[in-house]
Length: 211
Image (cartoon, rainbow, N blue to C red; front, side):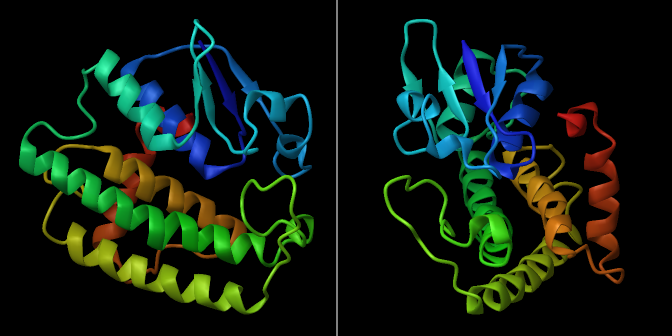
């Protein structure tokens, strides 16, 4: 197997953390999104959408989308469980990780891509054939959505150790990567959000956080 990666991007990191938690080690090929390497050959021959990460299996099968990759690894390596141990947990992990994805990850990407000079004509990931100009107004909207994300994190973590009960899961991984990515746009966990601060300290201390 091969994993097409980008060290600076939060989406590939979500998969890297899951792999680190499960002890999965495969060759990783770094593709520079900031310089647009993902929108040029030879990477477009690997993924015509220009998206990262992409997992390539030994038989040549390739697929992108982080959760597809993570579900694949969860099936192959079920321990430790990161997608939920019961029907209720699986539903909650899916629900919470999607919320962290939209209000944390995508909002952060919206604020970052619509402001950074490198993305002035590619404000949406992928899309190698079309210029998608930045919209400055989306920076403020992204930041407002991140405020809502932090309110939700604090409310949820006031009741549980991790986002879904007492078990670290994909919901935590997505939220963790979102919080770390927000440093690029100079947003951090509010000092008053003590429950989130406690959670962030714990997840950041895990060896997988270095992935």
